[in-house]
Image (cartoon, rainbow, N blue to C red; front, side, top):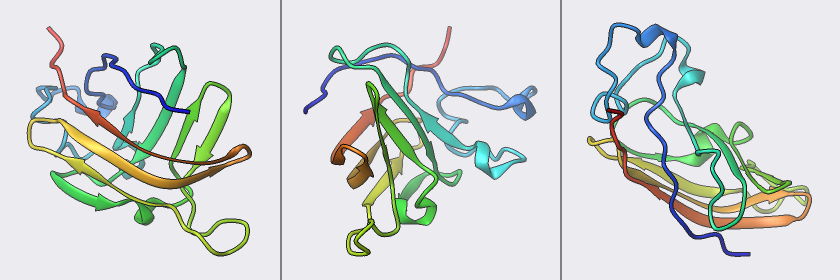
Length: 134
């Protein structure tokens, strides 16, 4: 299955960011009190006819992070099929691999290989451009 398309989302901040100017430029370096709250989520609008859901944790900051640091915590769902990054698969052989790149303007890319689910494995890349709310 290939999913390709465009959807809109704005940067998300937690309640601790109330006094912060919440823009694409401040999102990458925002440090929430709870480090688990710094994450990337996909919009809920369909993309290429598919419902995508994603929660992907990564450290605050600009740059590239190896996804293995958060193995077992991140997931992507396509329609009703869920996939998770894993340290090793059920045969103890293949770990998920990939990276998250965040640029100073809030844009970036998530690349992943061998996210594992009940229906098999997926690999791919999600890129985004951050758009400030008006």
